[in-house]
Length: 237
Image (cartoon, rainbow, N blue to C red; front, side, top):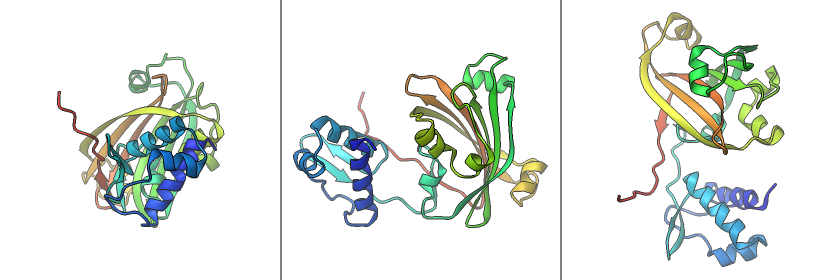
């Protein structure tokens, strides 16, 4: 594990064990360098990543401080670390409904910026939280970037597989959120009625070089889902 990730993990564990509360100041950069036997750039990288993940905020000239703890059960739609990270305190299960290699539809071509003859992995999953139906997820992965998927991976954690096995490091994500209604197929899967409201989240995931590799659509159970958006610093232009 890279040293900066080790630092991130240790600080997150300290915060989540409530050993540090909102507003508490982290040790100085110099102290963290000594504690973790790491260089200044490594510590700064870890702090920047912790700020992006909304665990801390940094005040120039004053140091780094703990942000308010997250509310349990809320899905952070800006988080790129996978659903399991947002709902890590709950039992989350995935059931594979479909997995196959297809040619991209016009919708996928437009969102992934691919050619019509490129191979795409199509994945459909039904996700449950504490045994209750939670969401239906359809994802389209570029096979040239994600060369292999199977049921075990799909029903465990695709994100973890991408990071730890394929060594893919997502760069950024574009999210598109709208309110819609359920068709009969989706309603039956979620134990709801056709026409019931739902939230549809479309996401395009990019590599650090800006190349898109995953287009996903998630339909959420309106009675089981709560969202939050983690804010960042206000910039006066």
